[in-house]
Length: 153
Image (cartoon, helix red, strand yellow):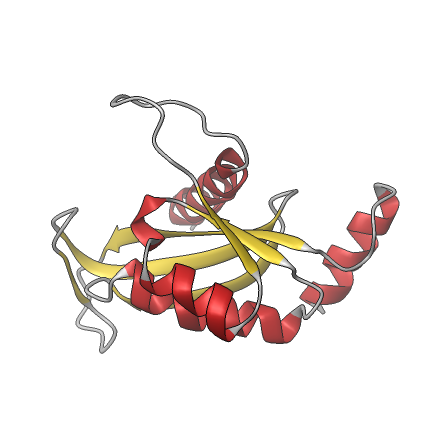
């Protein structure tokens, strides 16, 4: 169903129906419930879960996976991108941030035979990085939706 919506939307924009390039990222989320999938993201000092998403270049979700926050991006990213690739075999490459260096780079290049581009940080402060803003915007949409759900009764 989701794949059909993505394909229809891409066709309406005059693009190919099947995405060929993707962007991967994760977001750690605090949780208070006693769930099985919970851990501590040591880098961000967050106890909870991590949601991993793969989007196309328009920001459409191609794959989502939620797991314990203590699983590092380079390790979880391999499974997440592989699962996205099984849904969308037309994906030729992926863009990721510097947190995905080494393990994911080698996995995508050597095992899956796809290209991977690791974005480098431009400055020490916050700045927009080409291609990466798309996945960040998708996280913003998800966060807004979750916040909106909390206000409804």
